[in-house]
Amino acid sequence: MTMPAEHAGKTADQPPIRTPAIDHADPILRVLPWRTDDGKPCLLSTDTPSGFMSRLADNVEAAQTDAAKTVLTEAERALTNPLSTRAEVEYAGHRLSESLKDVLTIAESRLERLLAGTPVDTEGTEK
Image (tube, rainbow, N blue to C red; front, side, top):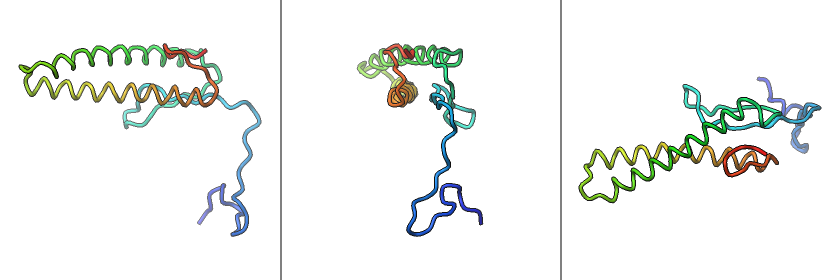
C-alpha cells in the first residue's frame, strides 16, 4: 500500500511532511458560474483576472443575476395571486430554486476571490 505524499515519512511523534509549493505566484482559482455535464463545478486557474474566460464568466454571472431578478418578480406574482394554479406555483418554485443555486454559486465564488485578495466589484468584475 502506498502512503499519500502528505503522510510519507510520518511517525507517531512527527507532523506530516508537506511537499513544498512550486516557486511561482499562485494563479487565482475561480469557480465558474456553470457546471460540467456531470454536475461538477468548473474551475478557472488564471493569473490574469481580466482575461477572456474571466470576462466571459463575469458576463454569465451578470446574466444569471438579471435572470434571477426576473424570476423573483414573476414568482412573487404567482405566489401572491390566489387564482394561480398549482402548476404555476410549482413552476415558480422550481425557477426560484434554480436561480438561488446560480446566485449562491456567484456569491461563493466572489467570496473566495475576495478572501484570496482579488477585489471584486458589485457588478462581478475583478478590479
